[in-house]
Image 1 (cartoon, helix red, strand yellow):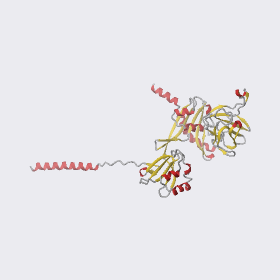
Image 2: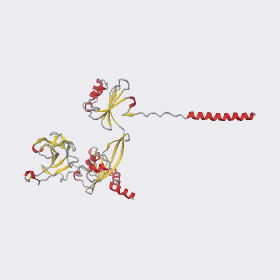
Image 3: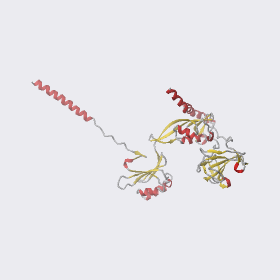
Image 4: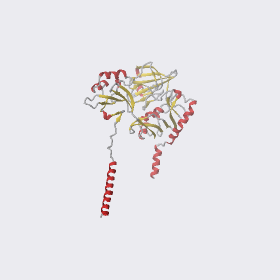
Length: 422
């Protein structure tokens, strides 16, 4: 009997021990609530503020925006006077986004103003305690991209067909602006490029960086281009070919981007309107929409910026003792006589002033005081890379050149895909 009860008590004790252990085991499994991630932007915890996001409207001023959000006038005055080098309040532009971080109390007074200069850079005006103004930038991720294309109709179409940022078109045309006439591209011309794309927060596309390396095959002739910091030119990044020759020339091929030549230099031109009398055309006409920027094709000093007869509004630039250029029929000039301009500076805009049947710029080119055809001139080249710098340059470009050579053109990719399917 005692043995029976002893066994029962022992069983109860064991069961009770198991239950007790089970309870303790359950108590150890603690499920913590998932913490809500802190929403940080521009270096601020946005949960601590009432956030207003907007864009600058026509008629907006920094002062008015701040007064509307209960910022004291002395603070506004201090910013406009003492921080103009960091943030010029007069230069906020229509369409630019901004954030106002307000206090969460009933006053909703502006604590911080954030102005987005562009998609990456921004300016912070912190009104808390003493005023503080500073510039900063969003975290950017750079992703290398390779691309290639074959021209069927135009460079821009070939680039867009490959899903490439349109700005790469401009970048590529600038790299080869001195060596390739983009008005005379041929069907079947090819290109390869290596560049980096920028992403904010890993996902938001923020544009393309300058081209690092490229290969352009024009009329069957391959031309390599490698971006390299030329120490002999005060750390200026230039583009050189595989033999260290500078791709830059003293003159750009054309004063406008992506237009068309509507009339060439022709000393034997005859026009029906004038009874087929000989009327030489000593310029090259580039047709483009009114307002298209006109660029100086080389460094030089403006000798004329005026309006005269059939030339309409025009600019003339003296580049050195040998060369001068002239740009006719402008809508308006952007430079004055005596100004020094750099290659690529906008000196005016396409118009129809003077004798013209449509919007264009007549580009005239002087060599030793005589007008010549710039498209037939062997334009002087920039200096090649200095001999002492070449070994380091070749070491730098070799892997880039190998990478370019391994990039396939679209037609090869399509052929391989068809072979795989078969």
